[in-house]
Image (cartoon, rainbow, N blue to C red; front, side, top):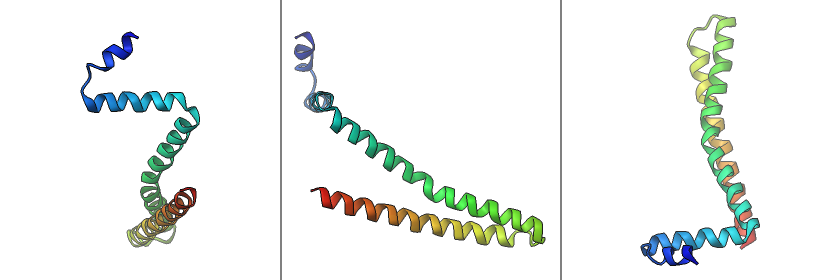
Length: 103
């Protein structure tokens, strides 16, 4: 009762947020789905740098073995970044298709 009275003193945007949180608390499955989406979309930011870093590391190792100093490091870093972009586009395309099928 006290919480409801205090919520009426909040500005409209804050009241909307409080209402949304209450609705999510009432429906745990929807809350779980929200956190699954947050985890999914936050992991996308690691795909491109991971591809570039893996390519750079592989290039560095090959450069050390073949004595071709910066050539393979730079080349494989760009190839890793390109692979990261392609994988990112594939994941987003699949997510868009899945979201379109649920509507």
